[in-house]
Amino acid sequence: MRRVAVHGAGGRMGRAVLRAVLDDPGMQLAAAFDRPDAPAVGRDAAELVGGEALGVRVQPLDPAALAGVDVAIDFSRPGPSLALLDACLAGGTALVVGTTGFDAAQRRRFEAAAAHLPIVLAPNMSVGVNLCFKLIEIAAAVLGDGADIEIIEAHHRHKVDAPSGTALGMGRAAARALGRELDDVAIWSRHGHTGERPRGRIGFAVVRGGDIVGDHTALFAAEGERIEITHRAADRAIYARGALRAAAWLEGRPAGLYDMQDVLGLR
Image 1 (cartoon, rainbow, N blue to C red):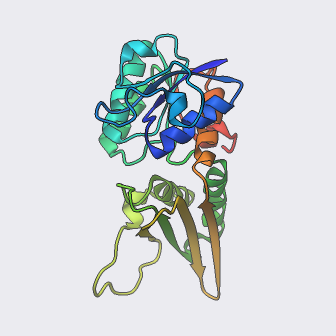
Image 2: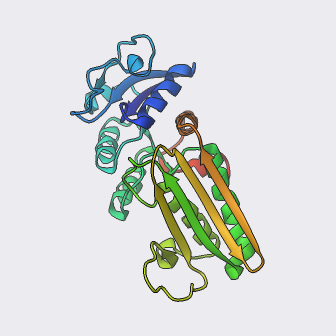
C-alpha cells in the first residue's frame, strides 16, 4: 500500500485528490498539507471531504511529516509547490505535481531535483487530455504548415494563470511535431490592427468565467476544412484519478523527470 501525502489539501483539486486516495484500496492517506492561513488547517482531512475522521489533520507543510511517506501529490501554486519539492528532496519522497504556472527558472528546479528523485510533472493529469496531446502531435505532423493552429481554452473565474498549463501542453505538442519551440511561434494575444495571420504560428485564446472546470480545443484550420481535437472536463475527479495513477506508476522508478505521457506509455 502506497502511503500518500496531499499538498494543497483544502483547495478544489486537493479535495478531489483526498477523495480519490480515501476511495483507493491501494493508497493510504499519511499526511495532508495546506498554506498556514488556509481554512482547512487543523481539520481532519477525511472529514473535510465528507468521510469519517481518520486522524490525519491538515497542517502547514512540515518536512518531518513526510517521514515514511512514499509519494506526495501536489496541486497548489508554484511557490508552495517548490517548498514541497525541497521537503521531498530532503526526505527522498517521490513527487507528483499537477500545479501549473511555473516559469522557466522554476521548471529548472524540478529538472535539477529529478537527478535525485522520481518526479511526475504534468500540466494535466487527465488520461483523456494526455491522449489529446498525442493526437495533436499526430495532426500537426501530418498537416504541417498547411493548417493554422489555434489553442482555445476556458476555465472558472478563480483560475489565476493563463493560458492554462493544459493549453500550453497542447501548444508544445503541436510545436514539437513541427520541429519548433513554442515560445518562438506562439501568438499569446491579439488586439487592434494585427495584420494577416503569418504561417507557422500557434495562437492562443483564453476564456475565464463561472464554474467551468476546463475546456480545451486544438483547432487546425486548413483551406476548405477544419479539424478540432477537444477535451471537456466535467468533474475534477478525472485529474485526481490520473494523479493517483501517476503515484502508483512511480513505485520503484529511478530518479528522473517524467510526465503523464510516460505514465500512460504514449511515448
